[in-house]
Amino acid sequence: MTSIETDVRWLDEAEMEAWRAYVIGSELLRQQLNRELQDRHGLALVDYEVLVRLSEQEDHQMRMSQLAGMVASSKSRVSHQIARLEAAGLVRRRGCTNDARGVYAELTDRGAEHLRDAAPTHVHGVRRHLISLLTASEQAMLAAIFERVLGHLGELEGSTR
Image: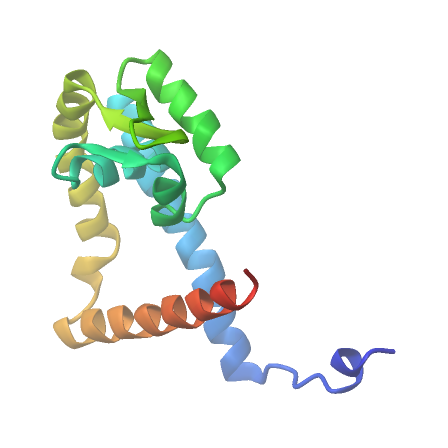
């Protein structure tokens, strides 16, 4: 047996309740937001997130490796995703002028228009299914909790490179 197996600090009832509520609640929320975008705009939530990240850039483009980090995905998965979005005319790939190996994903005019059409649906869903269910202090607490989690996981990722 490893030390992890012998030194397990099992979750107590309250901890297990919090963990399970997070796992199930976050998955059901993502499924609902995805369903709303798919039904109304033919756009998957993960694709919407890519379009949003590109739209937030001054020049509407981002290196593929940076984009993967921003949407918490692998470079390979983002590459496949960009290929689908490119086939739909929503993004295009561009070579990096100062690095022959680098590739940019760029939001097209059609992609920006599709995003503008889909954004109200997404924002309405986020507000209806999460934000409006929380008080202002709960919203602040949720943000603080996940900023702490992101910081912790970022440190772990940085230590494995």
